[in-house]
Length: 478
Image 1 (cartoon, rainbow, N blue to C red):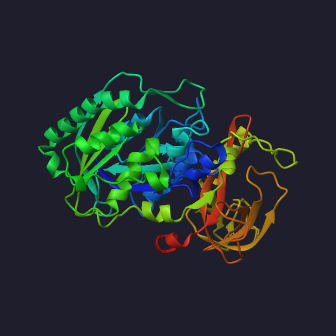
Image 2: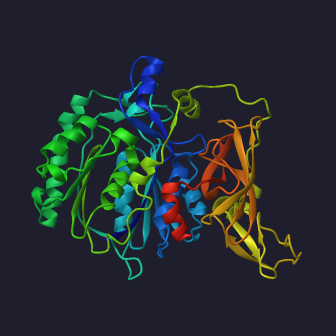
């Protein structure tokens, strides 16, 4: 079984304070906040951002990509193929979707660990529920990417999988019919009653495989959407009280399919060599994976850390949240709606559209954005080399705040960016307030969904501010 080489987590910038739900509806809510994907983000774009963090600075390129989410942007069409294109992976990579409940995320992780080649497991989720429901207030949006492989001297394994055990049980605890917007659940006490023995069985079996005892577990990470059952198992598992890892429910909510990846990234941010980490998921049974950190765990911490991304959060109103989720149908700007992308030109420009690959003139060195056969500067023809820009930082040289342009979240901020090393590009600025944009602002690129028309998602790249908590590490890696 392969080991864990790298792990990346992406948490959207926005936070909804739970008390805002109660203030609007007179019910629901609670304390703390939950993470919220922006209007131009979905499970695929979240997955791309997490994968970019996992692959940053890593020589390994995955030969398998497994994408798991209960909120796929497409059915019938592969979302994993979109992600593979955005990451600029070779077409020989096998990319496949894992659909359904949080258990599919664990399945993707196990499949990546058991693959006979470097493999990337992507776990992504956008949690929602009816207004005022527990799912709405306690859910959170996030994605996690786990890169497994045999390890090399340059990219060593930071944690080894030493055991895995599972129980599978058919029972009606949570379900959602195809096409339904929200999940339904049975009474929580029922889930608590059924899950307890299943979790104990898988946990005990995994420990027996590894010849370990509960007292030897250094960190116990538990997840699942049946909150009471998850917390009960953490209390009764037999591990030391200090080994039960705290989750980020108060700041981010329960991130569903991505939750275990978020918790593991949080644990690896402070774990030392030789620690035994138990991952336990309660979903349609129970699954336990035991990881043991290696001496290299301190060399490759998840970056940016979960804590740093929590700190970088910004609030949004409940009305904005409902609008972004499509629950509140507000009057759009009175402009013609943009057309959806056509398949043939999108296919012809796939390298530019999905992986943001420009061209560099080999005669004069000018970076041409968008890519061109004729150099903008010296007019040389077909003297171009690929110039990937998706990981290149840039600087805003001018901008405008457009309050009339069509956008689900006005106003639109349009910026012109000069990339480090050459290339000028005009695009939207995401995750920013009009008051903070300025000439000289440092930005990075982010894979977003520009619009959806006739069921077709038009994915492309936007700039977003390079936040101060990320600046140092990103500038160092750039």
